[in-house]
Amino acid sequence: MTQWIPICRVDDIPVLGARRVARPHGLDVAVFRNDADEVFALLDRCPHKGGPLSQGIVYGRSVACPLHNWSIGLCDGQAAAPDEGCTPRFAVKVEDGEVFLDAGELEGHAVGETRPVAGPARRGAVVE
Image 1 (cartoon, rainbow, N blue to C red):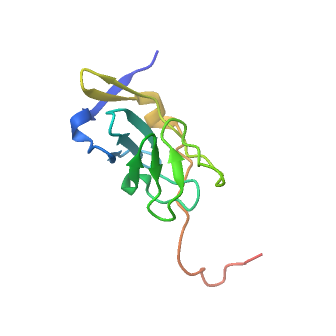
Image 2: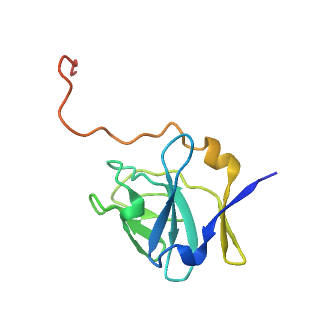
Image 3: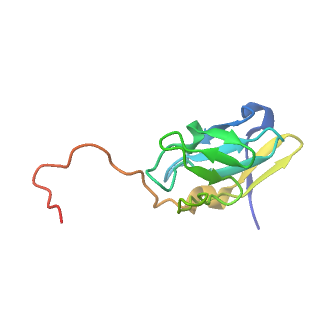
């Protein structure tokens, strides 16, 4: 049985924007709201270079990654062609204006995902 955790009110999410939900393990979850008041939840990481999707621009049922403008589907986390890749999505429900996420998913879904490390290579590192 799914245990739903209240996250916020729909009105707490900016129209065409997002809020981040911190987790005890793993990257944050981004909760998005479009102009039709639909709510979606994805891991806050673009599949391309790890950009924070919560800082992207929401349009329709997609979000544009703020780093390289990849279009990511809010329903499924899939990058739009010709780009390829997918970011994990999270179950979300809205009841009486309240947004809920699945407690089990928050605890264990996609906790192994990381952001790419940018910057110069470490000294002594072997590059193949």
